[in-house]
Length: 272
Image (tube, rainbow, N blue to C red; front, side, top):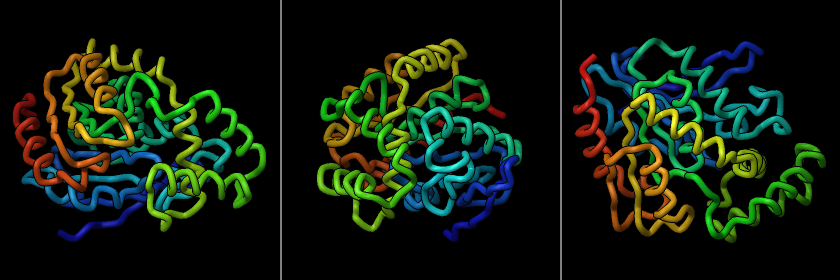
């Protein structure tokens, strides 16, 4: 299936780049929110599998990632978890009206929860999401202050941004083809994760009875499996797809299985 590139012009005149599979308008739109780092290309496999009659799929390149400039939020210095959530909420308001089902992978899970709590979507789907606490391999306080220092040394490239990239490549096994500054955007987003706010927003989603679907792999080496199950419990959902294998990148490695489960879940939602 051919993907279509388009942009959404933000109030400051900077475009947000997007990829669409399926028709330009549809009654139901899956909207993908990538992790950190990531881009719309992360969903090249899963996206086309979700297109159906009356349904299209849209994926964003978030600020500082893929084709989208960090200038959407004023530059790399201003990229953080809250700003990215604001960008996604604004982007939804610029899309043709539809039943929006927001899909978040990894760090995109946090963004999805923050946006959905505002009541502007009709359902959420979380794929190996970050959750209510940091992973065991992370040191949030140390990472926060390293991020603070990196922000105040300028956008780079510099010694700190090169070191940051080396950590993502050597310890987290991201490909070295990702541009250095995309790792900067990723780190700023990750180190400003607000876990208390995630809990509050998860409660709001549960109270609003927004439909929730969660897909997890037990062998995820980036975000522990029990982080996902704890978030699902907080959201009050029993709509879980739990797979033994697939690693962190479930949207690629288990795309066929995930797509089948998503179609089945969507069919249970209230008709339009």
